[in-house]
Image (tube, rainbow, N blue to C red; front, side, top):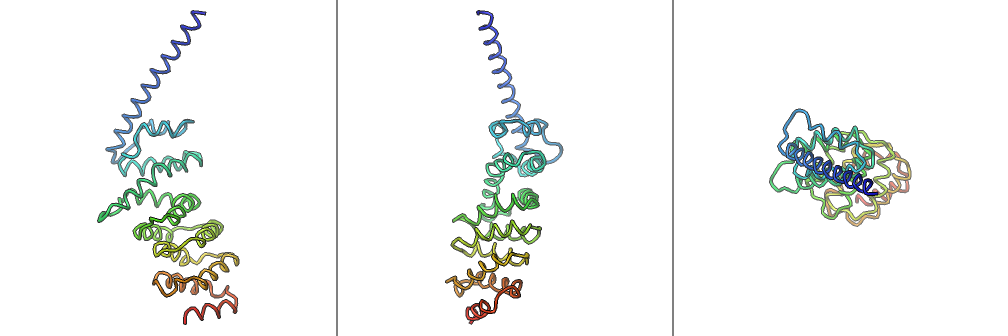
Length: 246
């Protein structure tokens, strides 16, 4: 019995030693990523990406202090290696707060590497729209700077029709601000092949909105819609839209 107890205590001590060694390694990794500019990223980051308790372990590296260069390099690695749920958590907990922090810095340009990271994420439309565009659009604090930045990226990427339709169906139920209209205009300018149901929702949005004459952003959206989708609109709805113009 005493031997078994001794073995258990020895195993616990070994685990504590391994744990302390790992923590020291992760903290050292974080210090390296804080000053990282180029070259190979620490090998420990690649190991972290395959561990079950990935999120807990990652925080020992203090990702909130990584350099923008490191954030770009690690995100590039994780986009390839992480499982979907892990990737979602990483982007939500690490990248998006860093992006917002960078955007909200007044009189400062968005970091080139933060923008490059965002551009890289935008190449995966499902993640880009569900984790970044829609939550930003739903936020009460969306800024003009954010809206313009995201609209630039939307104009440059290819997005599957079903993702756009899902986004618009949620987007059109919101209260609109000028910033949100900037995002909507960037989508309408892409001239996606939308289902008739979605075009009908857009028609209703423009016909029944009370903001038509209040903002130039709304009118830009309206004329983008007419330019790209007028041939899909019924005669009855066209008459209603013409009245709106007058």
